[in-house]
Length: 232
Image 1: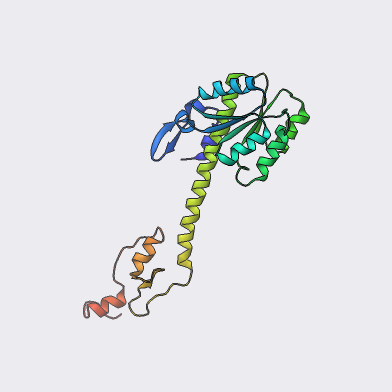
Image 2 (image 1 turned 135 degrees about the horizontal axis):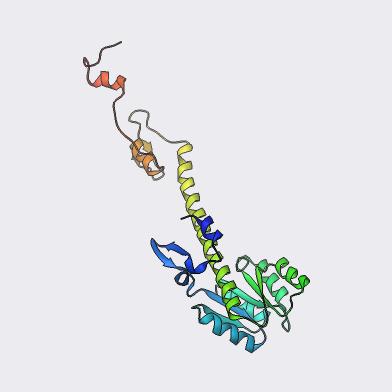
């Protein structure tokens, strides 16, 4: 699968499909059940967002302020946080900075909720770690589209990290072939890490993508079948 192609078409979710555990599935199935935390000190805002996003199949939890949000992320793993900027007590900027300072929560994407479209506030939001913002009053179509976009990017990022991990494991196995290999000077078997002696072709085949085809070199042919080959 070419992830660069998926990224290029990220805004066309309805037509995107990805491969999951060997089966093709739609974007809706991929994103279903992903956990979103809504942080706002106005109950009406939380209710409107929760209704819109639950209808999309997301798992929604809420917090009434920054301090409560930080407690929520300590107890749960979230895929996305919708964070109001103007709140009593700890505001959205301070909450976001606290999230980004923790290794456990630094990778969770944060979308700010704001009534202000002032450039200064928008830039400040991005500077402290936000990935996007949604202006109030909310428009359901915009909220859902932005949320799906960033959740899908998170899916792609996790897949990228998984592929990098698999590649590193594969490279680690290949690298063992470039180290010092204990090989028998007589039978040419190689001792593995568990102390077992393996045929050289078996050892190499299990630790690389190499395969073998067998034949007989001229020197061995003369030894095994004397008289069949004449010395030149």
